[in-house]
Length: 113
Image 1 (cartoon, helix red, strand yellow):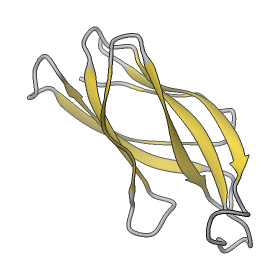
Image 2 (tube, rainbow, N blue to C red):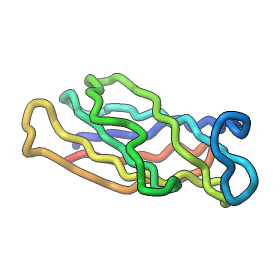
Image 3 (tube, rainbow, N blue to C red):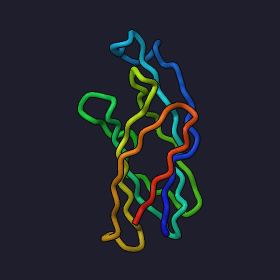
């Protein structure tokens, strides 16, 4: 089965550079998107913790066995919330989209079809 997984999550305090959240500070997490599929993937992710669900990882290619970082917002409960979409480069009709949530240090495995 093909798989795209979110690996390590690292909390980064950017309260000096980002707009203030409802908690009085903005917190980000650095997540790593890992392509464990047997084909290269185009991956897009949106961040549900920011107004308008902005894209936090814009349709970038992740080769087989490679990883790519994305910065996401942490909410008041110390959780990130994204939805990722993976498209096979070998077969563009092979598409899967799935939500992923977690906290700092939580690996979140997700699978692509």
